[in-house]
Length: 436
Image (cartoon, rainbow, N blue to C red; front, side, top):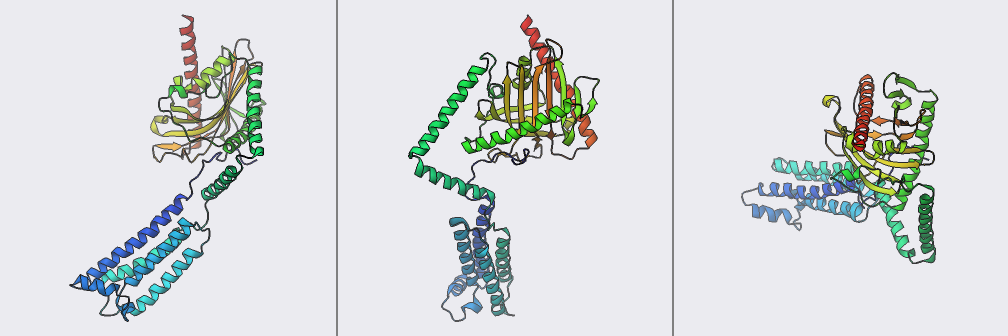
């Protein structure tokens, strides 16, 4: 299994990468720019620009190579045609075409300089045309992505899979596999309904705060392969964070705030464990802390479920407010979240970890930085005292900024206290309104 903190999913890519499209545009610009410089050189060559133009394009003239720069234009058009054909129409994954065009252009220009320029034929526009053409051909060699990018490899794989599916879609084996998959889904759903109390069962979407967000956005529909990849990665994150929680309970983590509410422990790799108790049912506590977070967490500006993986798993986008009087700017997060609801044992757990997705990239805004949540967990269970619920929260957040370690730790402690305080105030307000 790969690293649990690496980017989890990538959306279906387009055929040509952004780098390859940029290089194709550069090739077209090279040809057009060469033509423009040649026209400037031609019309400034003499008083009668029509005569100069006809003289420049007369390739039948025996002295054409010595008196005209139109052959550099022809070379530029041929170079652009070859590069567009090799790297756009037929996407080569080899350096040979661009290397050949650069080498031939360089050799041609060097020979051209020896025969063309003289004391009587050395105007500035002519110098600019030759130097620009020479520089552009080498710049194209520098920027041309002659190898397949990862995105283009994925596109080729998807295309092959689509071709295979289109050929086999009517075969009995594929239809049988799809029927088996649908039967398994129905059996899993029926099993969940039989083993879970209907009154307490919720899906991940039910426990999201998406309904309260008017700016609802969705990413494109995820393929089954991508969903399986997300589930596998999330399972690894869940195993990892469960182990961290066990270590914290065994006293292996350092207590940095033990005399106040909440209790905060510091673990390895900038992990924190927050523990506090509430006089209420664990299910109601989880509902308030997880689903109703937007109603009381003033540090969260945006929170929305943008894609559903299954009945207990979703992709969630959120934006945090600035902190420390603006010293820490807003961060946005793209997480995959999963819930486990065990009504028999009164244990309710939510697991989340950040992912990367090309369909929902970071916003190019200096005031908003993409943050990273490591494998994290929030659990509500019965406390040591009857009638109380224990909230345990294991989290790791990389705010992606040059923040001093001491400032970071003190700000996190303040955040944890304020976070728990806002949650308590929200619960007390709801309990008071229900009692009236």
